[in-house]
Length: 66
Image (tube, rainbow, N blue to C red; front, side, top):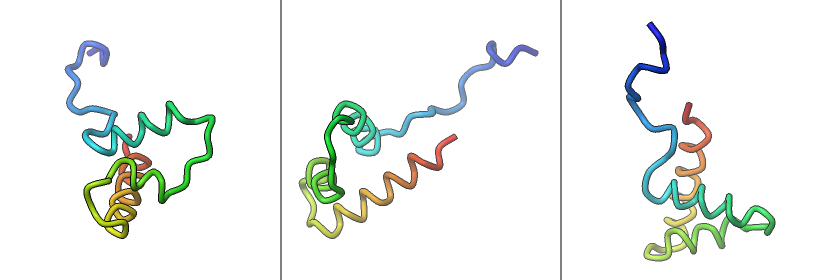
């Protein structure tokens, strides 16, 4: 059976804000980005401590996707 003919069962890309984080980091890769600025850009609607926590969770999830 050819794997190329198998239907995709899941996406390799994250969804939602983790995807936004990936896209932002990719498009801004020539700039140095602090964790605080990334958290405040992507999670602007929540307090800073929660935004930093969400950033850590999103980064860990992106690194563990295979």
